[in-house]
Length: 134
Length: 58
Image (cartoon, rainbow over all chains, first blue to last red; front, side):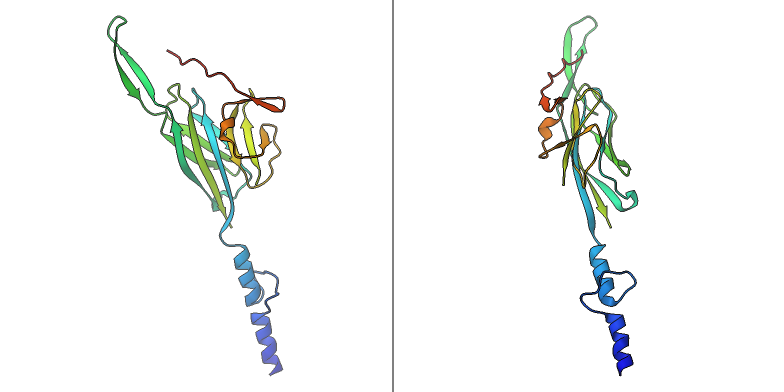
């Protein structure tokens, strides 16, 4: 009987057991609770200047195999191009695109990079978050 | 969690970040809040100055 109780004590353990991946059931539960889910969230905005097609921001180090970056949106003013006749008469205006459309990447453990195809003399502010999991 | 304004070689703020921990880096200026209004401003000494917008190119 004593041997049986000792066996259960080793297997189930006590509520006060320290977290351990190899200990009792209580210890393993504590380990899972402490090492599951979100480890950190970092958020930021990056400004792409009027002539910039890429920019990087520094974050605290994350494990890239356990982290993801979310694009939270971008804001930018419109841009207009001018269409002239042969000569110098302004014939019309047209909308310039490309500077709105940005990509966000977790380049390495400490760097977030935003890129776009065209700058079009227009700034853009890009918002992102990096979520790291255990 | 700390907040930082990141500046380029001219002292212009191009990024504001809420990080998971402290970063000790010359181009990362610790700030009190997540202040997006610092984007485009210039760090002069311990203060931020507004930089005039450049004229759009033709």
